[in-house]
Structures are given as C-alpha cells and as structure tokens.
Image 1 (spheres, protein in one colour):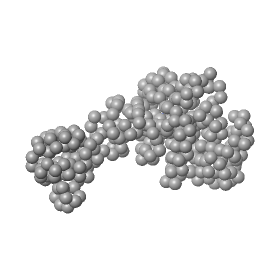
Image 2 (cartoon, protein in one colour):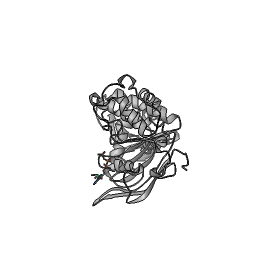
Image 3 (spheres, helix red, strand yellow):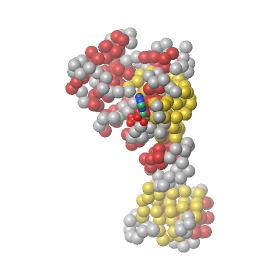
Image 4 (spheres, protein in one colour):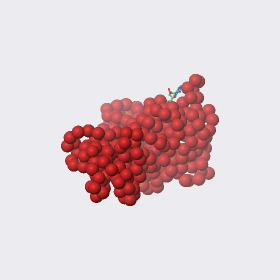
Amino acid sequence: MHDGSGRIHVQGLNKRFGPVHAVQDLSFTVHPGAITGFLGPNGAGKTTALRMILGLVTPTSGTATINGLPFNRLANPGGVVGAVLDAHGSHPSRTARHHLRCYAAAMNIPDGQVDKALELVGLAAAGDRKTGGFSLGMRQRLALATALLGDPQILILDEPANGLDPEGIAWLRGFLQTFAAGGRTVLMSSHFLREIEHTVDRLVIISQGRCVYDGHIEELRAAQQSRALVQADSPEVLVAEVQAAGYGVEYLPDGRLAVLGADSRAVADLALQAGVALYGMQDERVDLEQLFFHLTQGQSAGVPQHVPPTSQTWVGPGQPGDGGSV
Ligand SMILES: Nc1ncnc2c1ncn2[C@@H]1O[C@H](COP(=O)(O)OP(=O)(O)OP(=O)(O)O)[C@@H](O)[C@H]1O
C-alpha cells in the first residue's frame, strides 16, 4: 500500500550506459502542492532520471519512489501518476477521442473520462479530428490529456512546454498551477529556464547527471544579492550611513563601495542625506539565467557564493545615463 503523500523521493540514483555516467548520485524530493521544475542543459540526465522514476529504466544503483513505493509496485499506477515523456505517441489516422478511448480501455477507465480530459486540455472542439493534422502544441495537449485520464495525484512531464507558443505556455502554466494548488504534485523537466521560471515553485537543477540545486526558486534568486557599486568622496561617512540604514557594505580593491541588496538610487538618497558626493554609480543585478549557467557549468553542489552579475550603469546621483562612466 502506498503512503498517499504525493511525494517523489529520489535517493542516491545512478545510471551508467557503458562509459556514460548519465545520472550520478542524484537525490531530491518532489513535494505535493507545488510545481517542481527539473532543469538542466541538454544531455544532463533529466529524461534518464524521469524514466527511472517511472520504472522504465533500471537504475545502476539507488532508488526512486512515488508515495513511498517504486513505480512498478504501485497498485493503481494510472490513478497515482500521469506521465508525458513524448508528445508523439498517437497514431496519425486516429482521432484524438479515439486515441484517448484506447488508453482509457487499456487502463480500465470509463469513457466519460475521455471527454473530461479533452475538456481539461482545451481540445474538446478538436476531439474528432485526426491527430496526424495536429500541431506540436495540440500534440502536447493530447499527451497531457492521456496523462490525465486516470485523474492522477502526480504529473510527471518531460519538456511539456517544448514547441508551445507563448499562449500555449501561458495556458500550460495556468493549468499546472491550478492542478498543484489542489494539493497535487507536478514534476516537469526543461532545458530552458526562461520557459519555466514563471511556472515553477521549486527547482531541481542537474548538470552532468548531478544535482547542483534543490530548493525554492525564490531562494535561488535571493542567494545572490544585487548590489550598488559607488565611488564616494568620503567613503567612511557613507559606510556609516548605509549601515545605519541596514545595508551590508564592502570595500572593493579599486576603492569603490559595494552596498549589498541596495540599488543605486537608494544609495544616492543616503549619500545626499549624509552630505557625501558620489562620482560614479553602477547597479549590478543578478539574473536567474546567469545563476543557471553558473550552476550548470561548474560541478559543485549548493548555491554559488559568487556569480558574475550583469551590470546596468548610470552615473552620478542625477538621472540614469546622464553622462560618463565608472
Ligand atoms: N539508452 C541510452 N544508451 C546510451 N546512452 C544514453 C541512453 N540514454 C541516454 N543516454 C546518454 O545519457 C546522457 C543523458 O541523457 P538524457 O537524455 O537523460 O539527458 P537530458 O537531460 O534528458 O537531455 P535533453 O535535454 O537533451 O533531452 C546523454 O549523454 C545521453 O547520450
């Protein structure tokens, strides 16, 4: 009997294909009531890991459980997990409804679920069209409808946003957020952070088969603070002022100050208040995309201590871009 928790638990998972160590000592937990993005560059091992979770690939070592059991030991797998690994699984001469009825019959699910699933994914009007004429976006929706037939507690989706236009991505986001808000579990893979950053609550990031980040997306954003770099005529006066305002501050080797978590306008206001002249200011903003590149190029676990930030430069306490550079 499974524990009904809606959790996916991966522990010490390894998979070797001959000389290729596709998944290396991978451990993470996927929680219910949230959308977890499973992110990594091409070839990072995402599909292999998902296939091991779904019992389609045998791990070299380690375990993957769903509701406390390996997938193959779930009594009613279709009612626990719906999975989409490939959106191209339909016969082109079959209608969408016929395709879903075949799956429903194989899973012992009443036909009524077919219309419900078509409705849920926005394909009700296309139910009697042959799938051979479907766009990639429609195929993605049909694959999702197949996964939803058993009214599962958990959805596992491999690159579900692949090929979707912005409208399709927005629709998918809304659908998955509603699904997760009802206390269900979503694990979705992607190799493209931008595609999923507004959809997911949590991220598991892998690189060359290893986990390099596991946590809330907001924690990842907050892990690297933006900072304002300023050149002041009286640095020690400004340091006292920004510290009194609650900001951390560092001296840079070139004599500038780095005010952590502040933008240049906030520092300019404090400098004005303290009667300190500023000669140059620069905002350094950390972009999530850069964090992703940093995490997936290195192999160390955990959040990086320093990521080279993007820079937006403006000069002086006046208007952005009104002359000069730091
Ligand atoms: N059946 C297999 N036989 C040999 N090597 C394999 C097999 N399946 C995957 N690999 C290798 O394992 C590594 C991980 O592949 P995997 O498809 O899991 O990555 P991925 O993160 O899903 O990539 P993508 O984003 O490109 O789909 C790759 O080097 C791949 O070539």
